[in-house]
Length: 176
Length: 179
Image (tube, rainbow over all chains, first blue to last red; front, side):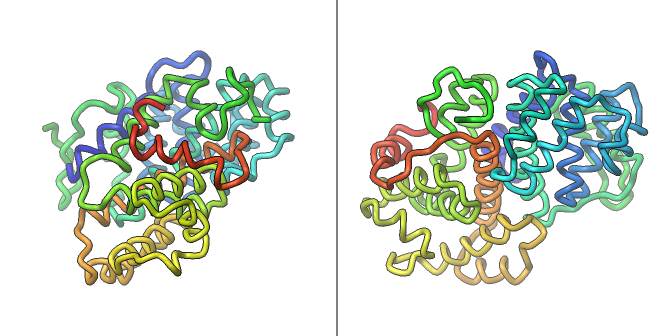
């Protein structure tokens, strides 16, 4: 780990936003927001890993993740999730782009204040994580199986446990 | 008025949001404390200038003005630094290393992939270490979060620079652990 001092608060943040119990949004729904925003930011690593985590949080359903990334409006998700993903996309393009109408639409579809708050914060946080990962030009594996294994682990354990050790040459996994 | 109902509608910017949701406030504040006041070879004043500059580029009035006021408190420059940061620091003695790090921060603000090898090489030539480059990228990225959080929920912010004087002093000298 290059900088444990900053890793600790970053991991605590992602654990709170995506994995800890939430009054109404499931971990799978929250991971979908993170995946969708990472896709909009073209961050391959974040999009793949959070897509894999979302898949495992949603009963190993890869179809939902794929369809949300392609077009949330036609994806098999609730109207409320569609409205929240619209807010997330506005946040990704810039905080001021969220309109009263976006908020009113989400409320009409049943979104609560905490759900709107957490959607904005998750979308904002992934505008950070994506820039952090891409801004330092980190290595991003291509192996879909690798993302699936890492995603399964994070869906189960959350973000505070040691990562798998990945052999960069072969992209093989082994536990530390 | 903010997009959501806040426990205390009078608290400006991120302060109202943090008070409203302590579960998420804790890691957000720990991150700010670590990035801006934790151990680093960059001074807190330099790091607050990076945070304020990114916030200005993101047009987040609350974050720009409050973090510029914090930089002014660290560096004892007076509140003129707030407008200096908007203008790109033409009249402030800034090291060439910090100028190169601000260029990296600006690229991160536009998008992570915009950072070029030339940007990194230029910073290294001015003596920037790997940790300084890492922390600059992370501070810039973090303010792309804080700014979107504050503006995405439509929070209110005081207008004039002078209204941020006391807040800047507190951010600089009390820190982000006890806001």
